[in-house]
Image (cartoon, rainbow, N blue to C red):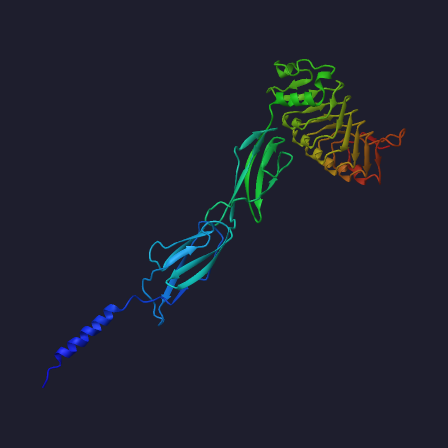
Length: 402
């Protein structure tokens, strides 16, 4: 019997030789774990996994894959570990395509980046400012990852424009003393910062009054705008604590307007400016004179409506505006002045009904709303019935309505 061992050895060697000559598997197809990615934040990441198969459909292990982003300024792609796994990072708003290539096989995934703000923060350079001063607020919007949203357009709002105003660029100007908040809004998002407007030093307020009312031409401006103590300035009277309590400038040749800076005279109890030539509206900032008891404006040329803010002067006992040019209706807020003893609005240009709220002024002793019969184009032209609520004025001694 002939031995077959040599022939078998040759066959085995041939088979081994044939296996040694076979090359690496050829990629026939490539697929990705996702065909599209969407980001709403910058610096956010997502993974893409690639699967490469040969012609028989078998998965090729550890294939060589090249990854590229068509616009790395929108999203970049890295394969830090295994080449079949890539990390996509959002960079900026826009769209791009991620391409994976292995041999002749390719696959793509579209990437859309559209940053969406999820939080808003407001920052103030200070927590307080003096009346008349300005500061600029800053606001920043961030996405869910914490990246800043560039170019966000905020709308700005003050909680009390009578205390502080804010413009479209975030500039805040203090108008009167008091606390307030500034809010920045971006779509449904908003954030606020709390600030305080501090009163002007009284010397600066008096300077503003002097400049707004032609102080250089006053009949008497002794010591005004000098370094003399305020108590030595003509018409200025201080309380025991050294604060301005009474400003008495009746019949002193004042011309011009009452400046809004007057709101900083927080301790003022008497403001007597009658028998002058003041014009323009009564500034709404007067509402901040919470201790004011006597407001005397008789025989000036004030115009415009009596501001409803007058109703916030709840300590007021005397309001005299006889002989001005106030127009419009008497504000119903005047009914809040429950300590008022004398109200004289005769010979203005007031119209409309007598507000029934006046009937709530139970301390009122004198009420004068009369017109000017001699000149039908001047004077009050109140209309309607006399409100029955005036019958509640038990302390009334003088009533002039004709």
